Length: 427
Ligand code: GLY
Ligand code: MN
Ligand code: MN
Image 1: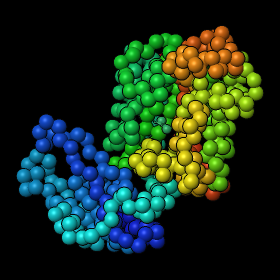
Image 2: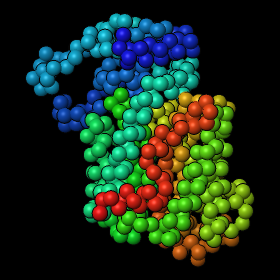
Image 3: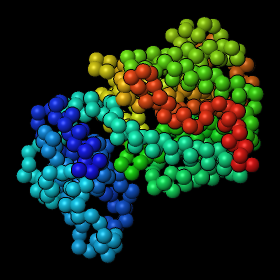
Image 4: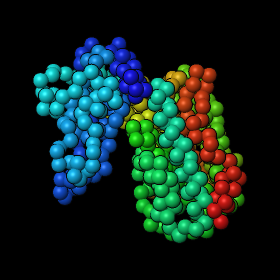
């Protein structure tokens, strides 16, 4: 049996201990643009990928105990003319270790539950929350390519006129490894726009470049890394000061990761560390814990400390908060907690991101109600000294281990001097 087939069988065996009914998972259909053969890039559903291993369009699998059935049409006879040789249904069945394989039309003869069955949702969350060795190996592969992409992006900066050119350099590394992006890249001098997907801005010498770029392996496993560097190759004193505050929050959050620790407490530790750093810089006034209680940190760090990572970059968020939030818990309505995507005790085998940031978001900072609410705790004049820091985020991917954690993306430096040195290699 192939290694892939072995892995898939062991996932089915684990599933069969959690449910006592059969289940069908569909991969999804190829979507056409203006004529049938001109299709959008295809990517199978993650739940399908978890048990089928291959991103097969227009396919389904049925799992009954540890038995796997594949439903897939053989390539159309004319397909070889346009697409070359494609593997047959039986060849694919062999590769994934299917016990039987039929054309899609046969599927209606089998009765099964589908992905919305509540007991299956519980089971799949339980399985996908922690990763097996094969999944971790795939995530490591995606991360290795992403690390290289970030290095190349840093080195490309001195010769880049626009964000698009840095993005192109980074994504070319991903494409050259025959991988795709796990999400739309963020490569921007406007890091204060949290999910900025514009790439047309010119790179100014005084700008920071924030790049949040992650590769995805062919079988769909994701990575998610952010670095922020100075376009000139050297952080200004104000940029460096804030960078160090964000880095301290990043380092302390990662140091706290181990099984049993509440992810919410890691978020709060990062918030408090940021608040402390901003007090030291004279931007915030008061006591860090009180400021976090009042959500004052969220003026500058309005999102959560991170999320689950796996077959999707925000893993299993297609299930809403069912995977991210422990049963009985729900999102807080607090400004400083409402965007937290994961609120569970950590378990060995989980992969989470840690991604603190500092942003000057005009929509937040110029909001009159907020300004009034936080009038005394923010030294607005002092904040104006840091106008060259629009957005900084430092994001790593961390495996929870039995003893603590392993930073899977450790090969990409976070130290500001090492980052300056990599950016300098390009000039
Ligand atoms: N790249 C999206 C995120 O960091 O959550
Ligand atoms: Mn992330
Ligand atoms: Mn990211």
